[in-house]
Length: 245
Image 1 (cartoon, rainbow, N blue to C red):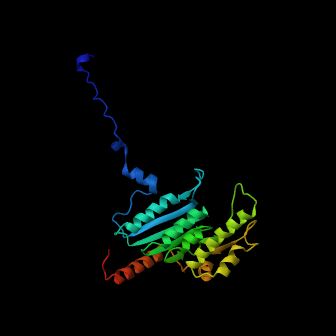
Image 2: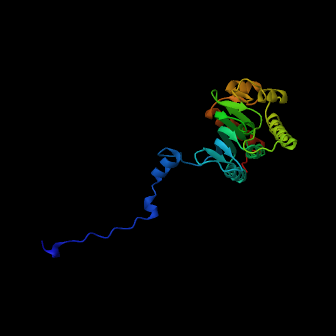
Image 3: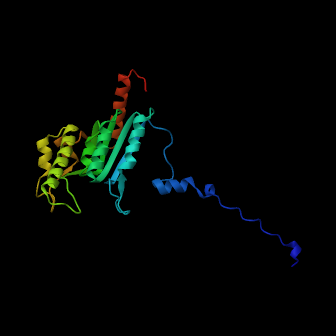
């Protein structure tokens, strides 16, 4: 065959970063779905899942919520005039006490209406976070484990260590009783109960019991939480004369 009839293939075009990016693939990887709801919302939704990570970095196989990620989000939601309410969804096993209290204090001091929804579990330091909002809802099958503060790792066995733990425990109890209808006597009874948790002290409270004890306001789900949040947003609008600032 004559070489004059041969045609050289055009040079391959370099694959740019833009060409590599596929929005559908990215959405599947990040959210597990092929499409996301469009449009802006006046409600900011924040999730607290897994273990609340504080001053120590947890192993990579742990599902964590880093408090240094949540605090800027709450500050941004407070400053954004388009955001009129904040919905906090919890499914957490607890974690760092100081980090959890910091998140709870941030939620409690927001000027905008807030609602928390406990799905699955709101255990340990997740309890103060669950009660920190203006209104709290728990799923019927969700649970909350209430137990004393515990330390792991090296502990110096001196009276000052136990005094420090006692003071931190009082901080947690004061916050819970100050932001819910549960009494101090009841929360301590649940916290120091023996026999219910194997090899541990505390109580596992299921949805209906959490409402009965006064920890949570009501049993419900996502629709109930959004409906309650919208109701509180409307009330705030009426108080401001119908003007959204």
